[in-house]
Image 1 (spheres, rainbow, N blue to C red):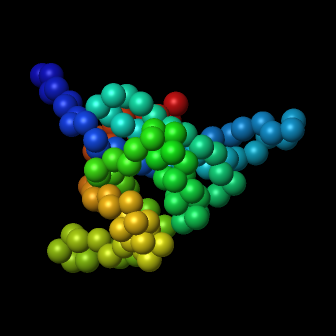
Image 2 (cartoon, rainbow, N blue to C red; image 1 turned 120 degrees about the vertical axis):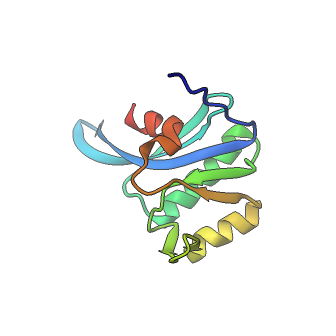
Length: 129
């Protein structure tokens, strides 16, 4: 069976992953921020020493500058830097810095289902690559 994946324009997916990099001849682990626009397959990646809340925010700001626009919504994992708590009804209580960033840029946050890697296939593949 074939299921067509259709992504409306103006929506994004974001994630962090890890990669081994060589900087100045020294092999080390880097944390990679990735923001993907699945409708157009456009993407932005940036490396950080750690996947902190500040790195999440910095990655967004640089991605928006790169694209020249802010998406209407972004699909996220339930990363602790972003989600302070998942309520029993499934709603997310956002971390303060993340909530402020979403309000500033007027972005609707959406979340993948825990344990379901296919919710964010585009950005998950980008991080893996």
